[in-house]
Image 1 (tube, rainbow, N blue to C red):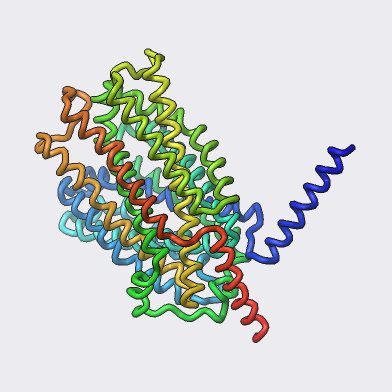
Image 2 (cartoon, rainbow, N blue to C red; image 1 turned 180 degrees about the vertical axis):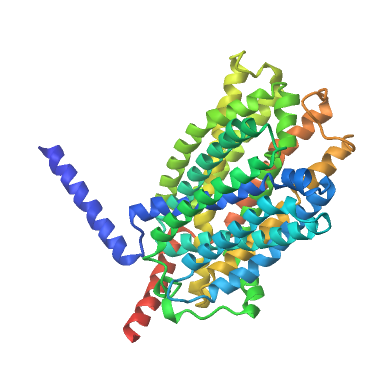
Length: 501
């Protein structure tokens, strides 16, 4: 009887607390929180499609590997420069259909138009025009891709301003991303390539285009429906009291925004280090040469999915209670400890004893540390998005300018500029130990120099990045308590606007 009364009392307290937060914040419904991140399936679908565009460019358009690589690399430069421009345009958009919905529709139209023409017609045009045609279509795709990236990020900010709900979006986004790329890898490797005999049949690319477009229609539609009730001017910053962003505000926005500066330091160093450690060449060096069992790479990735999701859910719940900053700091410390122990294991132990055919101390210890380290990495990455949303609201609080598109674009521009260095960084370091003509492969003999270079690229660069992130977080002021104060101030301005109207 007492237990029933206690449960009823606890339930009543939770209901009252929820009602109080709904009055205080612009909270999202459970179904909105679950469905809006599905829009990422569309974005990632087009990303996965364009990840194999080099095969089409060299195999059917007739471009050399050098020219194809140059065009694709140049597209990243174009992508970086278009980010702030598109972000500024979106921030100035105040139509009856909001910001997010028209942006996602434009993104879908541009990416669909460019990919359909690229993979269905580029190989049919006259040889003298193929390169120009390819570049034009690729540029159109980049504009659409940027609209999608910025539009989805703005929606994350608009749909809720509750510091307890925002980490949920980061967690769900990471879970959906893991699910998507698992399905995508299976679809490409176990269905498309066997069906068409590899990448030498144009039908593979055309079927993947159709699959991607159908997936994008569903995913973007789900996201648009989920955001519809929130995508209104009264939910943009301080509502109609928000001061319009101007082109000349871009530099002061970065120069005088300490939370944005610290966020960029933490997020970009993390991103660069993860790209370096996750590079295919580094993966070959670790599993194929140091461990001597390249098959372990794919198996551990498959095994890691469930623990990754479980620890990610736990990390998001912690961040909901204590704030995104604290969750990020704790998960970063966990990354440092787990990967530090992993380095000691590989250095002091015998990596060649790691394998599923030899389940001893080395194999069990490696799998435990690898799975735990990988999982907490996902927690840190998942909290990056809600922290960016906090930075956007803090800027509104300080300047009365609502600039989610510009802030997202500024971060994206710096992130792309930094992350584009990863292949050059790896190439220069490997050249320094003798790999000037070819990269190491699974048949490359083990040497001490390969071991230490592998440790640096697969673990060391991440340790440096996480240390930089922790230092940056010392100067990042947006705790859960601070963000609650910021949201109260913004809501007061919004309410003042409503009373005037």
